[in-house]
Structures are given as structure tokens and as C-alpha cells.
Length: 63
Image (cartoon, helix red, strand yellow):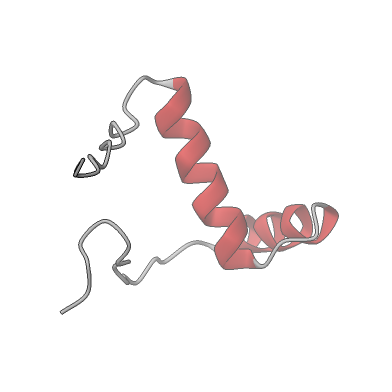
């Protein structure tokens, strides 16, 4: 089973043609895939609104 911290989830997203064209153009301008652009847009929105999940610190065992 995949580690929950590194796994991704897939979902279907429906957007109108004009919005998709705008996302495609924006992604091309920033040399990203459409998927990468959408991930960046979502991450930025979460960060700007203080809703980004906190990253867990991984403790290392001392011997």
C-alpha cells in the first residue's frame, strides 16, 4: 500500500471550454502541464487562504 503522505488521488473535473483554454494558455506560458498548473493553482489558493495542510515532521530515531 502506498504511503499516505506521498500518494495522490485522482478525480474528474469538469470546466467550461473557455476556462480550459485559459488554463492551457497559462500552463504553456509557465512551461507546465495542465495537470501541474491546476495543482499549482490549488496549492496557491490554499496557501493564500491559510488552509494549506501542515507538513508533518519525520522524527529520526537516535541510537
